Length: 97
Image (cartoon, rainbow, N blue to C red; front, side, top):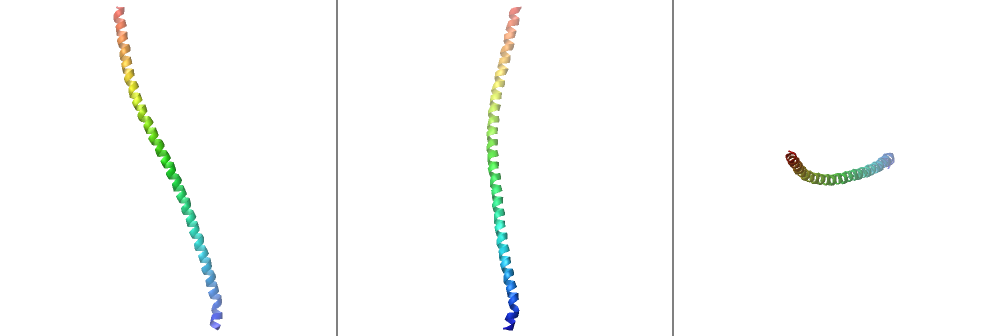
């Protein structure tokens, strides 16, 4: 019995240490969860922004494709208009002679 009375303070300190350790482990686990949640939130936001930018890129590429097609048509028209003006000038100069 004397031994148990002698060891009682040690058991009490060990029990308190285990309780503190359990609280610290719980706090650490909750911080990890909070950190993971924060990381997941950031990742989700970045994925959302990436999807938005990719959609905008597709839209801009489509606009560029349409503008290229329109530009080709306008260049074709300019070429024929210039040829028509040159022919008209040639006819005028022939008639003036």
